[in-house]
Image 1 (cartoon, rainbow, N blue to C red):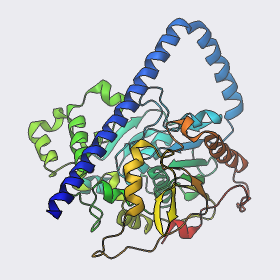
Image 2: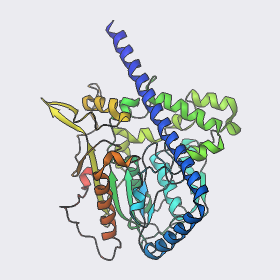
Image 3: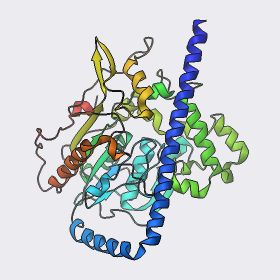
Length: 426
């Protein structure tokens, strides 16, 4: 009887979580469509005036921003860059707060490794090369999207950039910097870690997140999925979405698995069945983002990463919990995003399985910001004044350390917090 009750409770939680995520996804998609329709109507009725304004803004931008190193905003899981979801901004318009900000569109569910490779070619230009050995092991094409013109082709040690990553995007940047230090890009033997001026993390998943286990990753290995879970439903939906390969829909939003060739044109019905059964594809090889966000996956990544003396590292961690009589509970129900409400309750009570050895002790960040994980993205109104304070401080700091003429000194710690090595490495 107890087992039946627990099973019923688990299925109820799965149903509610699935509905909440589907509704939120539909809300985001419909908001983007509505925004595009509104923009199209405005352009139709006010086309002459808008052209004049655009020309004036473009000329101002060229004069003021050409000499500044770009600030690159890197989105997290299920995120999107400029050009996806119409005019919707993942960073809630933060990119408009500075003259030279880039917002790359990387695979929303692809692995940290693959996204780091994509980010490099987004900036430098050329055809994305995932590496021959990695591609063979993971079962996908070695080459991917072509960038005819890089968004910052002059990028090198004399023209470094600032990176700001949200959630998994912060770890993507760290992996990219390590690749630069290791000269891991064929044809670019002069890369170095000094191509990166600073890395700023917003709720960065440097050490993994326990949410991955609540969503369905097995805590025993951090790689495989539970038989029945939210991530299994996500896996099935993504495979079917990519298999149908509807051009206009994928142009609007893409999970980033094009290099796996999951389209019906390539694999047919039999290939679809193999993917759904877990025999082939990114979910079979483990070359997708969730395994990288488990505690075990983060440990594997961090064991290969270094921090470098000529790069500034900053981190903002968000928290929306407090302790009452020794029990961790949400600090405010009204301030939690509906998408995260159930998971916040679960994560505050989550404990590592008693029969599995804990991978390591916890690490703390220096800068704690009151808010949930997605407070500073998508919806600007939710964060209110905090939104402007956070992004203004980040961009101001980037512009303060715009060029590397001398070895860096520690910034003013009363107005910002440096992420120490021990918070990044084990």
